[in-house]
Length: 51
Image 1: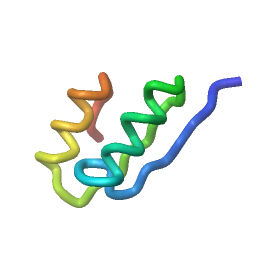
Image 2: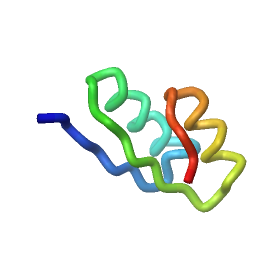
Image 3: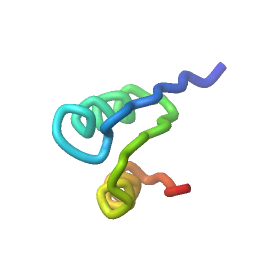
Image 4: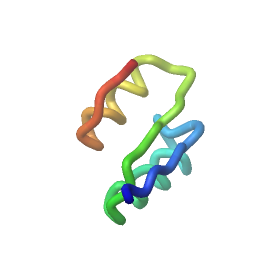
């Protein structure tokens, strides 16, 4: 079974660091952010998509 982690505030700061850590540990991520540009940057760094 895949592990999934939802990270709120994942586009910068502590949230982004947590998202990066969980990605390295093999989790599938749902990164939630208020800033669209920040979300796009985080998705690009983590190999994801923005919805």
